[in-house]
Structures are given as C-alpha cells and as structure tokens.
Image 1 (cartoon, helix red, strand yellow):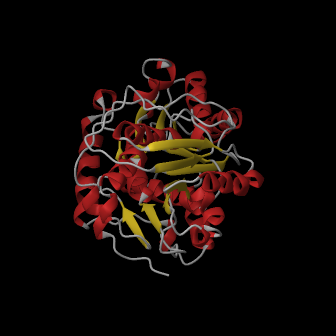
Image 2 (cartoon, rainbow, N blue to C red; image 1 turned 60 degrees about the vertical axis):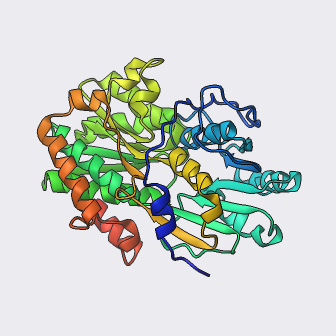
Length: 370
C-alpha cells in the first residue's frame, strides 16, 4: 500500500484558522448533538455526513480539540455525528459498524480505532476514512483512507526546552496514558529538547495505563516529586492529565505542561487553579487540521499518509499571554530558535520511530532517570 505524498496536506495547513468554539462537555457514552454550534464559524461551505469517533468528550485535550473542528464543520453545513465510545475496546467494532450502517460519507477516527476501520474499510468503498495521530511507519490499508501522522516529537522537543529551563531541581517528569509508540515519541522528543536546554537534565517517566484515571496521574506525579525531585510535570494522558494539575497545586512551586490543546486557555475561566500551573502546552492542532482537510476535501490524496509537524503549523507549543508572562525570555528565545531550526531542517528532534528497537528507547529512558 501507499504511504507517500505529503505535499497536499502541508499546503492545506498553510493558513491560520480562527476557531471560536469551545469543545462540548463530556456526555458519557452517548452521541453528542449534531446541531450546529452557535459559537463556531466557518469561512467555507460543505455537505455530507461525517462520523467523528472518539473515546469521550470533556478531556479538555485531544478529543475536545477534534470536536472544535467538528463544530466548525457543522457551521459549514456538514451533518456531523460525534460518537463517544468510551474506553471498552470490545465495543468499538459494533459502534463503528452501526455508524457505517446508518450511512456516512466520511468517518474521522484517531489511531485508537485504526485496526477496527482497517478491517472493514474496503467493505464501504463509498465512505472516506480519515485516520489521524497515526504512526509514521503505517501502511495505508485502502484507497479510500487518508492517514495523518503528527510529528509530536517536534512539539514535545519545544516543551522539553521549556520544562528544563523552568526546572530548579534539574529533574522533570513525563507521565503517559497508555504505553504506545505515539506517546513514546512524545517522550523521546521531550527528553531531546530538555537535553538541548540542559545537558545534565534528569527525566522521570511513568504510565497511568489508561486515558481517564486522574487519581492515578496525581499519585504518579506526587511520587515523581517526592522520590525524584521532579518540579515540572508533563502529563500525556488525555483526560487523566488533570491529575497532574491537581498534584502541582497540592505540592506547590511546581509547573506543568499541558498537552494536545492550549490547556491554560481551556481552564483559565472555570478552573484558574489548574490554569495557573500550566506554563505552556505541547499542542497538536487536531481541530484546525481536520477543518483544513475538509476545506480542501476535493483535492485530498486518498490512499496516502501525510506527515505534519512544526513547519506545517500542525504541532507546536501554546504561545499565550500567560506563557509570555511566566516563562523567562532566555527560554522563550531558545524555543524560537529551535522552532526555526526544526522548520528549516537544521534541527531534527529525536523520534521513537527512528529507533531500531524498543531497547534503544529504553536505553534513553534509563540514561536520564533521576
């Protein structure tokens, strides 16, 4: 199968998109409303039925970022059905099958459902499947599929610079949700960026085991602090990430990084205690990317994998007013320099996908463990 042609989506992401919608609140394992959001605007029109499949809204992170994009599609004229599956993988096949049987022109899913949709995509040739957050070495399974790979190692490299720069103890942390290649790629880039800022930095890593257990995240972060001296937390775990913000507030004098969306902005009004410990966020512009795919849907290169990173504006860190206020200028300067270097190719952050084996990744983890 094919896995080339990265030019189309790079061009798609060339312009900035203003999205004013906030993501919907968590609604359990029910379908979200398909009514167009009054808070979302679109500068294009489209038509067709779209099924957006996610584990659950309300994570103030990855899934919600995608829903922001879906709200824009609704405003543009698409009939969008958001399907929240929960985290019981045994239900995924049936829920996806139901959506396809109900009829949809496009199905939008993350890599969580990759195996499920790959197994049946060829049975639905009239449906186009958009899979995002895919591994960089994935082979496209069918000609009615578009794979999107985020270079999360590039954005987490920038986050590592910030974390190492803010750390007073010389020890920072990273806690993943489910142990998989994408999250390991986050951590690999994070360590590389942190070492670029401080060659002697130590990085403690741990795993929650799911995307929702915020209590476990809180416990792991507090342990990283008490046992390893970690004073900057990096939760890469969807909805479980709020546990890191709780831990930072309880421990005190701790910074955290958000992930996937600008989590400072997400919590600024309703939970300032969370917001005020988030120095910046390592972002994946999921919603913006999906909107731009549909803005250019007639030119989509089906049957290909598209790689998107800092250069294309698909990943980065949140440069908001709070970041400008709390992060020292020398760290911000280092981030800007790194952004430029990544964009022009003079800096290539380490990636988990470049390791010959998982043993190489583990060697990296062991080498920086406090």
